[in-house]
Length: 192
Length: 157
Length: 164
Image (cartoon, rainbow over all chains, first blue to last red; front, side, top):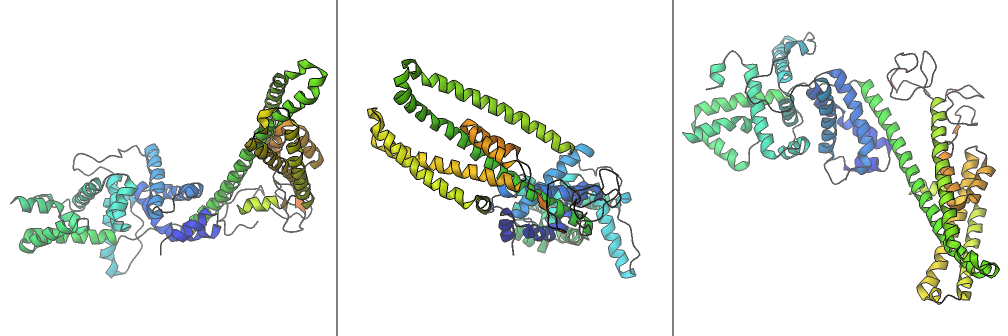
């Protein structure tokens, strides 16, 4: 059940196809943007910008290409431009293995009261989300594309515009840094 | 052992399912015999699982509606723009065709009829070229000025 | 392509007939002139066949274009007689170019009283119905998808809620 038929209809100017496509990709797209820019207000603005860009460029889109990858590339370009302007953190990989500084726990989503069974799970995923936020953007994006989007490595390489080997090395380093972030009490065990 | 170190490095990738089948098999084989690596691999798998199970943030419904409305308006705008551009290209090309087509007629007429009146009128091509240039320049200038003024008026309204 | 067909449909049928007639006349006329010409090179076969045909096509398209200008200017509530004359009389088709650059936008039809209205109106002057989405506070026209009114700054409701 791919988006090919909707894309074809959209290229012909069918407005309903637009509605279908948006509803199909809205959660994934929003999640990806939020992981990249971290601020919900920014992510919301970029969400609209992405779909505007899609409306602009859909005619020039070669339908034989992968629409998923293209959509994420469009979103990524907009997000990177925005990040360059508002958060001039380095967009390249850090050379050292240290976690970048940053406000970790402050950016948590509000903790609603939950059943006791879920509290621990929540606690874990909140810590994980907090740790994710502190990673550099290049690590955040490869992790979200691989584990939340469940994209194949080739697709990730396409979206990021880097060779497959780079994707693998970034994936490896990002996982290591994430783990390092989560278990600061046992540095000895993690890094034998 | 060198192998052990190398495999330890890529255990995280194994948990992410990012290894080629051949390499994955080597890792699986090693892990069977090495308790340390097995424990490590399990740690990575847990982390990977947690990453996969992160709750998905939902976009607010009002945002989606707004985005859809704007994108729809943009689509219509693009369509209109493309059409208008096509029309203008056609019209300008046609205007050139008319210009070029009128030259043979002028030549025929001047040779045939006017030639009988005054031999000097056979220099028709100079007159024609001058006439054409003046008309195109005047018309082009008028078009530019009028459309600028019209655009200004429309944006103020 | 269907947009093209839609636009062609506004050309009155009489114009199509005139176009065909003049096109045929053009072929006949040009062929005759070529036959009578004393210039030997013109009589070479390709030119003497292609040129009248090409000329007929040009005449046909020209007539249709003028007809389109006439009925398009009419439906846009412009001075259609003046524009048609401009399109015809300004040589080399410059008048036609001018028309397409300067034409007014299409008028909208009021959903309340079905009268034709000039584009750009926010309210119908006959029945008062709102033609565009308006700001709930200052009643200015706003566009879909905006979050705030650019005139008074009020927050605008979601597009699903806005009525137009």
